[in-house]
Each structure stands twice: as structure tokens, then as C-alpha cells.
Amino acid sequence: MESSARPSSAVGQIVLISGDNTQTNAISRILQDQKLPLLSFSSPEHAIEALASDSANNPRINLVLLDAGPNATRLFPWLREVTEDLLAPLVLLWNSDRVQIPIVVIADSHHVPQAVQALQMGAYDYVLKPFSVDQLLATVRRTLQYRRLQTQNDLFRHHLEQLISARTEMLQHSMRQLENSYDVTLEALGNALDLKDAETEGHSKRVTAYTLALGRAVGLPEPQLRVVGRGAFLHDIGKMAIPDAILRKPAKLTPEERAVMRTHTELGYQMIRKIPYLQEAAEIVYSHQEHFDGSGYPRGLRGEEIHIGARIFAVADTFDAITSNRPYRKANTMEAARKEILRCAGTQFDPSIVDVFVATADSIWLDLREGIMRDGFAFSPFGYTFGNIS
Ligand SMILES: [Fe+2]
Image (cartoon, rainbow, N blue to C red):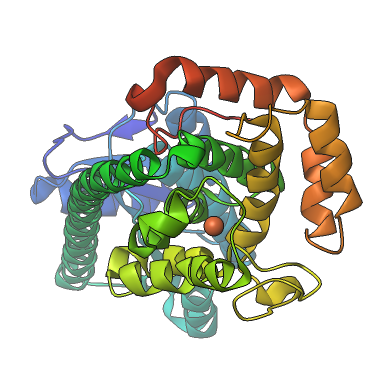
């Protein structure tokens, strides 16, 4: 550094870049008399060399006074150099300090248009030569005050952002905890249904695991997966309201009985739709027997009218039905399930979901199935750690 007054870290440095030695001396004296710490340089190049080369240790700069000296044509190139090559990197370096460092241009009184143009180029203020001590000090103090307020404002904003982000994190944590405790309740409800309907023992959990795995493979985002998981798990909850004589009938159902059985989709929907946390999942419960070509029930929805969760569920449900033991038949093979699902692509199932299903390795489905069979009721359908397909 070419010369410096005693630095004071509390105040921060004023940097004087002046191509006029007489001015440098005069300004140094004025500022030193006021105990304002000053670093002075004869050109932006020298300032950059001294300050940017040791930027980690250099003192904080609060103000740059820029005087192009007798060669007024240098003013704009110097201003650009100071802004882009000296100050911009320093502002970036001081991470917590995103405030621009103000530049005050010192210009001859017959160069007012240049001084005004310097303001348009980003300078904060100008002082016209010749100036009085009071004029210079008033401008310097006003600029330092501006810089102080900007810095305080930035700090305040920064703290506020940190506070908001900490509170948001706390709130999200509480929401997750609340959702998890709801899920535990749902799990108990689903388990109760599995116990009541012997035919479907373990079915709710398996079909939820398959639906979630398929949903991930299809590319559903995590919040949507949570909805789809709840819908899949509760899909047959309406069967709670179906008389045992029909639900547990060991023989084939009569047409009348089948009609009663079919009401379970709407019954399930009505049971959970008023619970705000399950509103969208209720839509999946309502639609889980719809077919892609409109031949399903209860509303005969078709294509994308059917909730994506219900379309994914339909494939998972058939896959589970074919590969599970039922009282009246033994479980069939993976291969048979694949064939049947492919056969029904475009009629019962959304073909794009069938594509994803058949592209998924058998081992994924087998591992899921094994995990659920092994852990039984200890297996949580809402533990989102299982079933990752990558
Ligand atoms: Fe069902």
C-alpha cells in the first residue's frame, strides 16, 4: 500500500484512488485530522494489486474516493475498473456482506456532466473541485452513514432469513411428526380390516408397498407418494361396512351380493373423505376399481379421469392378487402375473403404467414381498425407506 493512516477496524477503511498528488495529500490531511482511516493509491491498478492480492486479510472498505486527476478522460475507465475488478470480488468474498461499497467521484467543477454520468454508472455521489474541508467531510460522513445503514439493513435481513428458515424447519418437523402419528392410526385401521377379511390377509400392506414402488418408478414426487400410499392402504376400508355373510362367504357371490360388495368403494370414500388429511387419498379409494377403458365401477371413469394413484394401484392390486394364495387357489407365478397385466394394458390398466411395471426387475417385487411376509404386522406400509427402485 502506498500510504496509510492508522487503521481502525471499527470504522472501516476509506480508500482514496487519486491521479493527483496534491489532492491526495490534501484529502489525507483532512481525513487524518478527523481520525478517519485511509488507504491511498495512485491508480485503480495499484489498489487492486494491494487489496485483492491479500483479500483474505485486507481491511473492510467502507468507501472509495475516486479522483481521475488532471486527465479527466480516465474517469469512466477507472470507475469501471474499481467497480468490476476491485469492489465486486471483495463483496463476493465477504459472504455475509452483500452490500455494495459506495464510490464518491471527485471531479473538476467544469466537469459536472462527467460527474453526473458517473452517478448513472453506479457512483454514489460526487464532490466538485475545488472543495472546502466541510464539503468533503459532509459528503464522506453522509456516504459512511449510508453504508452503515445498508450494512445494518443487510444484517437484519440476513438474520430474519435465518430466523424464518429455522422456524419453517421446526414447523415442517412438527407437520411430519403429526403426519406420522396419523399414519400409525391408519395402519391400525388397515390391520383391523386385514383381520376381518381373512381372504385379504396382508394384502393391504403388500399392495401399498407395490403401489409405492411403482409410483416411484413412474416418477411421482414424494408428497404425492404419501397420498397414494394412504389411498392404497385404505382402498378396501369400505369393506368394514359389508356384512360378514357376504364378505366372508366361502362360495361364489350371487349377483345381488356382488352388487352389495361393489358398494365398498363408495362406502370407503364416504368414510374418509371428510378427514382433511385423507381427502385426496379418498379419491383413490373411490376409484380403485375403475378401468382405464371406462368399464370399471362405480362411476365408469376412463383414462386420466381416474386418479393416477388409482391407476397405479390397479396394476399393483392385480399383481398381488395373482401372486398370493387365496382360499380357493394357489398363488400363481410372477410370469403369469406379468402376462395377465400386459394382456389388460389399455383395457383395465393404464398402458404407460404397465410399461413401467414390466420394465421393473422381478427381484424388486420379490424382495418387497419377502420383507412383508417376514415382518408381518411389524412391517409399516408408510415406512418410505422400502421399495426404492433406482
Ligand atoms: Fe376393492
